[in-house]
Image (tube, rainbow, N blue to C red):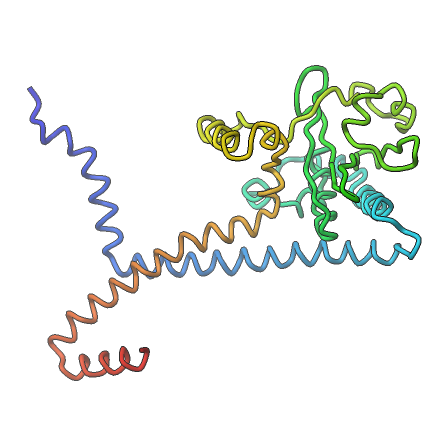
Length: 298
């Protein structure tokens, strides 16, 4: 019969190792340096991406005049997005773009490579429209019974959602001249199908749509969906687009890193305080200096 204490050893050892690691001041200082460098890197890349899309917005602004409406501004944004990204996918078809592209997969990568096909087009356009403060969501179209067979963008213009397909530089116009929504196209595909360009895939017939893949992360996302159903109701939950929330990749990583860094700073400060206190007992002069610094900080 095994000793009960031995059964707990495998569980105690990892915790003991973690405690010993975080008691090591040298390791804590190394972690502080690593997190500071990571924050600096993420902040630079976030600023670069924001500047990139601000430059795109400035180019679109130069094409806008007094006759433009919110509808036409959204369409011009899509036109610029299409011109920037068209045919890049064939150039960057190789997936070996390095760990930065794989780990972060920011919208900058989508914009410069188009390697995500319609997903890249949709994310880039959504990011451009956000610079105009248009509410946006990425619609994952059902194609031949499978969701996310094609991605398009929906943006709210003049209090109603309209659908834009940047992969084909396509928007749909209603009989009254306004831009159509996904629901408009879905309910009257026979009419709107006459507006698609040559080479358009007829399978993209607006069969149905979802805005989040709630099964992508088992347990976590279904639990989040159930919670949202209780808080805001199933109808509003079905319209939640998680991809938009996490689209600004570098900023998301920046805030996560900062959230991890703050407790690390507190642990390190506590360790330094304890170490300084133990040394000050053997050195009255050092103790006097530390007390003076603390009083000055107050």
